[in-house]
Amino acid sequence: MSHVDQSYPSTSRRRVKALLFRWSTLLALALVVAPATWLVVGVVVRAVPHWQWNVLTTLSQGTSGGLENAIVGTLVLMAGVALIAGSIGVLTGIHLAELTRSRRGGMGARLAIDVLAGFPSIVLGYVGYVALCVGLHWGFSLLAALLILSLMVVPFIAKSTESALRQVPTNYREGAEALGMSQGYALRRVVLRSALPGIVTGLLIALSVAGGETAPLLYTAGATNNLPTFSLLHQPVAYLTYYVWTDYNQPTDSAHYVSYDAALILVVLVLTMLISARIIVARTQRHAERSR
Image (tube, rainbow, N blue to C red):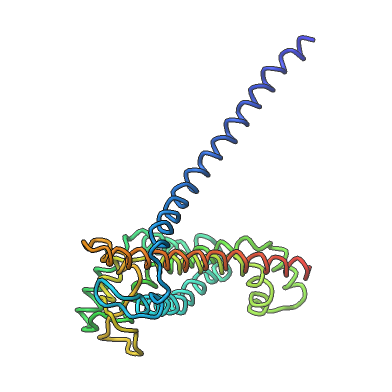
């Protein structure tokens, strides 16, 4: 009986600890969800009452007009970053996860990635301005903006790719080797297919980060009220974050409405990419389960 009586305090203590841990996790979740919800709701409440659909098809005119040039410019920048940073980041992650024999073998590369990820975006923008816009005489241009944005998000893509590949079970690689597949063929047909959800998610999140940047673009892309052209050099590019930042500081209500509209469009773009990432992950995982 005494042994049973002594077990009650320990059981109650474990229940209290489990309850405290559960409430701590709920509190941490609320601290993440609440600010994000507050930001999204704040943008929607400010933008929707004054929203006009012609803002999507009208060029900007200073502190008034539409945002067609900024929308197209943002999409062009994100597409370019997906091409440049996506290629470099995914290939870097593949090399670190699959072609490096040990974790120590890629220590130098991982250190460089960590250092690059730690640089503030405004520092990268200033370096891009000095080295590309001034040093190479490119001026405010699309190519300078793409290179700096890609340099900024490559570490995120490389890390997410490496993490996704390392989560693929070793049995997949051993099974492919037992079937006589070459390393390259097994990587393409087996390993990358299994890691695709994590790679796509990391890529889309990196694009969301690039689309929401302002400081690097102020130094490299400049600003313009015109649509993007096919010229990579000596041609400024419009982007949504410029109008969010600039027009909000103007004294007129019309400029504030343009700022709210730009913020709403940017939020919709980011949410669309995040939802697309979740859909791709769900469908890929479902396809993988069926093929097993």
